[in-house]
Structure formats: C-alpha cells, structure tokens
Image 1: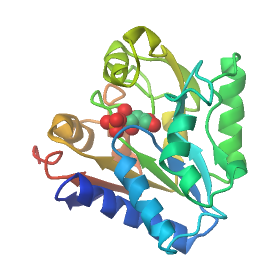
Image 2: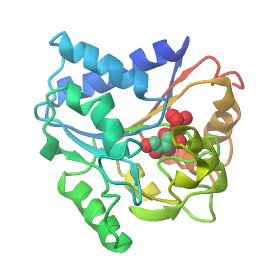
Image 3: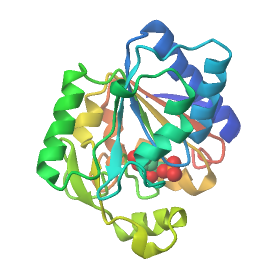
Length: 241
Ligand code: F6R
C-alpha cells in the first residue's frame, strides 16, 4: 500500500485527480471504476477543470460504477446515475455507451447483478478503481458482515448507512433500503485501487482498515491483501497514524 498525505480536502482531491489523469494519459482506453458520495466530488471537479483546459481526453475511456440504489430511476436526482452525470459525465467527452452503472429499475435482482458482473468482465476488467470509505468500513455497499461477498449482488442497507444517507432525501422513508454493489471480489480484481479518505470522522475507521486485522467486519481491510493500492488521505483522516 502506498499512502499519500494530503493537507486538506482540496489537496486530497488534486492528488487523487492527478493519479486518475495519469491513468487516462498512459492508457487512453482505460477502464475506470468510479465511486459516488461526497469524497470524490472534488476529484471530479478537478478532472473537469483539466478537461476544459484541454489536458484530458475521455473519448475512449470506459467506466463502471461501484453501486446504485435499487428502485431509483435514472432521472431520480438521488440516483447514482444522476450523480455521475451531474458531477462528471455531462462535463467531459465521455461516450454514454462507455459508461456502466447498475440498473436500479431492474426488478430481477439476480439477473441485474449477473448482467453487471458480466459487463465488467466484457470490459476486460478495471484498470483503476476509485473507492471512498464508509464510516463502518464499507467499500461500495459491501457492509460489515461474516463474509466477503464475491461478485456484484444486491444488499440490504444497514440502518447506519440509511441514517448517513438520509441527508440527501426529503425524509428517511424515501431512502432506498436496498442497493446493487460490486462485490469485494469484483473490487479486488481491479488492477489498481485508489482509496480516498477525508475528515477526522474517518480517522478511526481508516486506522482499522489499514492497520487492523483483515476481517469482513471491516470490509475495507481486505485492501491490505491487494498488490497495488494507493491511499490518498488528508491530515484529519490520518490523525490516528
Ligand atoms: C459510493 C460508495 C460508498 C462511499 C462511502 C463513503 O459509490 O460506494 O462506499 O464511497 O459511503 O461516502 P462519502 O464519500 O459520502 O463519505
């Protein structure tokens, strides 16, 4: 694991965006695994800025997102489809056909999970997977459990995750109870992983994930076993190191 210390959120975003840019420049037709949530917003903003300056070309880039709420249509402003379009896709020259996000409206969960896993395989796998870190150690929507789930699957969201995500909805009743997520196996098959972490509220869990035992109770701890992980975290998130 390589750990890069950033001063603050802005610095973290720039350092991480630099790593993604390097990937796109070195392999213009690379496959990027992408994340939503608040942590990557600054990274996407920086990538858009560099694209507008003419420094980046997304015309051959393919993407696969980590997860999507079950039951939310694409035009729902809380869907991850909407998030990705608002924060990145509609600002750069990526082709819609080259972007992949689980379909939250497919009622047959097994079918959608299998379709998505196959779609990632058909892309030839993920070159660089961007990850945020949940307060409970989740990556994607792989919540703490007794096992590391292998492939893309449907999950029941934990109360703590529903609680954390309610800020984005009108009321807690509107927060979806289920989501599609890449499995831990899907994530671990990525050639390179970029974990970004910001804020003092993540300091404890980051310490457990990197220094603690590898356990499905802290899903991100599995990253200790991946051969090529880069962590970019700000000083607040690294305060327990
Ligand atoms: C998002 C995702 C989640 C988030 C995590 C951290 O696609 O898969 O695992 O990365 O919940 O979220 P933020 O960045 O909002 O703290």
